[in-house]
Amino acid sequence: MKLSKVGNQTNSQDPQAVNSRVFVGNLNTFQCSKTDVERMFQRYGRIAGISMHKGYAFVQFTNPFDARSACLGEDGRTVLGQILGFREVLPILIG
Image (tube, rainbow, N blue to C red; front, side):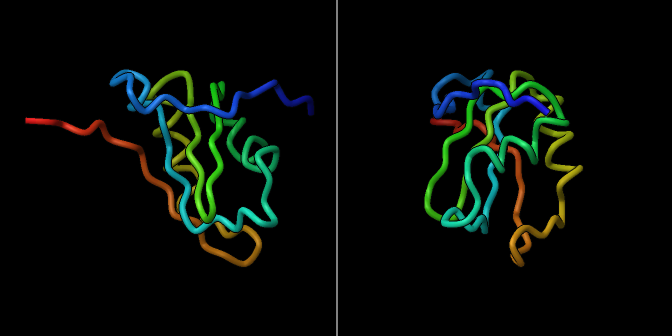
């Protein structure tokens, strides 16, 4: 299975892109790589970017439907002995 060249950035400023973004929590980023995260999520749709941080990651899909499918499909998944937390990122409303 060939992996695409997924970027390291996710777009937190574009309201349209935020609806296509998934938060992955409780992720052992010392043992789980960006490539591992891409493999986990690529079945749900095209991934525009993945940003890895200590203990969590953001996966940016190209459309909101794929992001929602990923959250529902991966709910309760255990990776490296840890139950991961998934949720769609919601836009921040100011005002």
